Image (cartoon, rainbow, N blue to C red; front, side):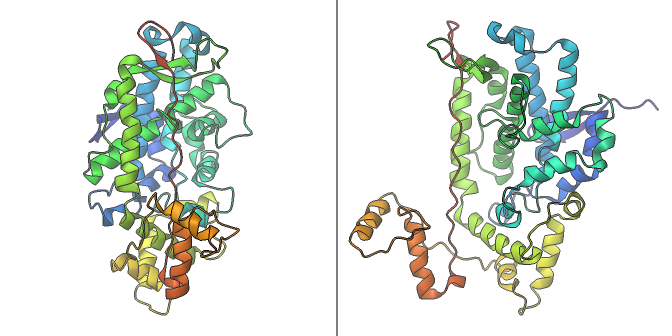
Length: 404
């Protein structure tokens, strides 16, 4: 039988996702297959029952979208005259497309069990899932992948997989910055495009949907601004016809955070999970070691949780019971804008004592202190998680050729 050059996965968002032999080699590897046992949205299925999708299919989707973006922005018909010098020649483009696809596939292989849920609590200061991704990319278990088909440089895969924000001490060429932006960019990265569409689809909500086909077809590499002494460093932008699709993406992200990611019951399950995993892995936390990491999935954590649920003397019993027995804590208070003024007045009047280690404008923190004093700290959990800011400034190619 002839050797298959292309392999396909069916996908609910894009119909088919194609892989060449090198990409298939990475998908078949142990680090990538592990993603079949890592929930994309942690314990969200306890709130949205359909949201049982895994990091595995998300990573396939990120590769697919990244390649679509690459093909659109490097099409000679779409290349803006001012950035022609940035685009490599045809042979180099073939190499970089291979690196882009592999980096997109590998960008999430460092995720801990249940993805982001307990990462900040379990990993040492300064470490995150991207640190483990970088270690796994250069680990011997993937050396055969980088040597298959297009032999690629490991450092190039690492740069594109995590981007310049993570590798602050590494120098990125303009082209490398653009490629990493295609995967992990704040505005139009393939990671963001796929997770919004995929999370929305599986959760059964419409908030994360937008016209991604129109958006991708209108993406261009553009100078950030033209004239008036502004920066001309190229970045991903859109033609004017795709502006509404770009705005829809930003709104989709906002609504998904408000309706799904910050759902109060979903968030309290995260806090119970953090408590359980902290006790499970002990005071030393989660080792930043590739071989240990490869043996840890949601399955190991859930198995330990079911075992501990049978032993009320175990310190982690209450967290396990809260999750498995649906005995999660209930919402007592959520922020109201008018509360800031009330709190400031109380501080100024001396009725509330400010805490030097916490912001004065945090009503949630002050209320949690009072509730903890009255009912005991073990009976109160505070969720002060704040959504990170989103890059919403990008160049737009206007109808008359100006860039705004």
